[in-house]
Length: 224
Image 1 (cartoon, one colour):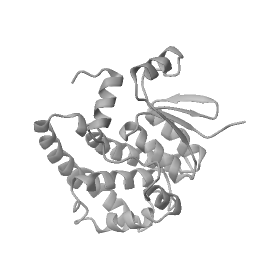
Image 2: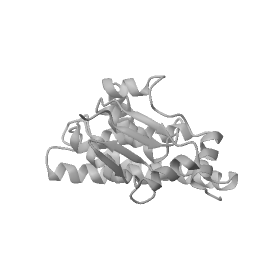
Image 3: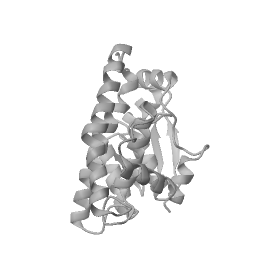
Image 4: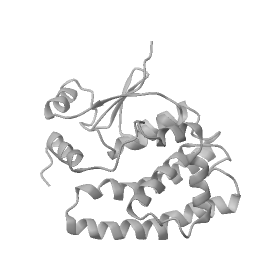
């Protein structure tokens, strides 16, 4: 018998947050084990659970999956969030890779020095408004549909909303010049599973704080 997926990561966003988002969007309940000590991490290593000695790791359908992209692709395919044919999957992959690039700038932001944070914030806003958001704005405007690919809800929509909300946390007015994305944000936020995930008390994680940063550095023995 297969139980709920179990997520192994820190009690914070990082690379696991997109996995939480996608499972939630699919309406799949999941459990979490938070890494709080070096000993927990070393036990996973000793047990052979971390193929490349890294987290995130997700136990799902009898597998211990690692590598964020592989985990997300599997969830998207399993729960019909990956398009209806190979062409649609290719589009979803392209759009997801774009939002991933943008989101990685934000994921690494809390670990920077104060001086580097100032520079990174400028880069985040610049790339969001000049490189990434204009692409999605044009896609939505050109095909006139509610969703990015095939006029059906997909992984690409989930991750674009996640990216939008992450950038808005850095600059609340970032969508002011993107009416299509404003409407998209409202639509996707009201999909029942997404709406539930956005409500207080869900398994969505808050903006990374000092405790999260300290825990990650201590468990992974990061020196910077």
